[in-house]
Image (cartoon, rainbow, N blue to C red; front, side):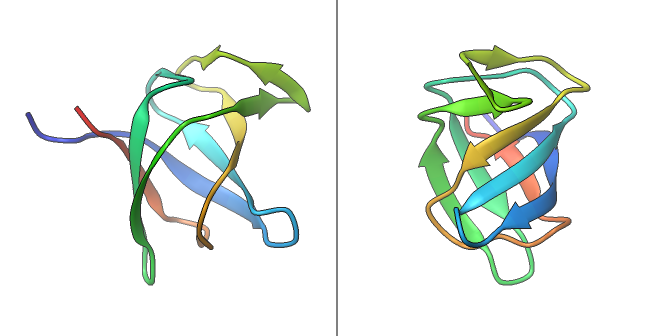
Amino acid sequence: MPEKLIGEVSHYYGKINVAIIELKNDLKVGDEIHIVGLNTDFNQTVESMQIEHQPVNKAKKGQAIGLLVKEKVHEGAKVYLVA
């Protein structure tokens, strides 16, 4: 099954390794994602995410989430849900 585009990185905070992702589809803790950008290409499992500095287990299309990422990402990187 092909990967499904679920969002895009709108900001990256390098000191704390957090990416802000604008969601185009729902996402939940435990999902595996694939982040692809200019110098970025890695998979990781969503272990935790936040909305407005509050931990959440799931987020819906249209929301912006803060996500701890294991590698540096850039604005505009695409985020895919791994099926």
